[in-house]
Image 1 (tube, protein in one colour):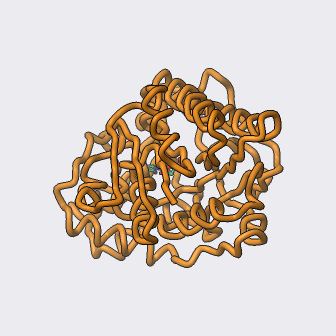
Image 2 (spheres, helix red, strand yellow):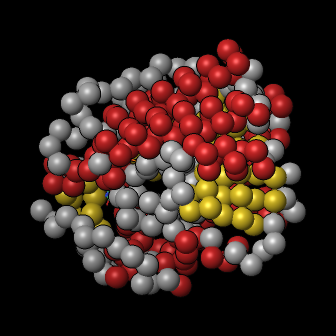
Length: 332
Ligand code: UDP
């Protein structure tokens, strides 16, 4: 199989490229390196079945050319990370909406199957936990920039589903729940790499808000198995699937766990949301997936526990202590 991965130099995309190359498939990557990094794919460049193009997904002729050469498309290129989204909403909206338009239009011309990555963020402020794929999406006010990400991804979902229903382009949608693992940087605000780097360097571990908010973290290897399984299964077409784990942890517990696992003496500090993300920020208090739909289709079940996931991230940063960091807010 020839597989195109947009955003293939990103954290998840590069692991997906590894998986397909290990299966003996041919992999093409399109990435503009805006949030991805050449470091993530450096180890693949010598492999004969690996090809990459450094260009934006907005570049329609490049996308069309790559789609022509491939059998299936993973559209993972997107603006991600709450920090980036809050700081650059124009870029977020344009990258996510226009990128999906270009990729879906090109795939439609040749009727190449597309799996498009959406996000658990689309459930927004819904209190209907655990979130089911057919549940309501409850987004906050448009004055709160965070929701532009969820809204842009919801538009992507509508568009992909419309292409399937109206034009018979086979599309599959996935909502990813807090994926973590090696190669994820803390640069765009993600909490696990941020806490691990803080703990390993003895800096304060920065909990935003009171730390009672919770998340379920999924190891990237479990996410990759789910993506490959869904792409392989004809029954996934025209459907939306949650991919995640149900091991829920509060951010306070996470901070303590990271500190223990790293034997760190870092203090744990609380930072008000306004200081971390600016005024008018709204967090999601809980985010837990209902995984029955994907389990019924492909038998998906996450294998890695939180401690195993954290162990992998800690090892990654221990081996690469000079990974880039961005300035963080001063503890208040
Ligand atoms: N968070 C935190 N400290 C940090 C970074 C994030 O307390 O240094 C919190 C953040 O406010 C959120 C949770 O950790 O409640 C998960 O944040 P992340 O950006 O990783 O993902 P999200 O689930 O918000 O998309």
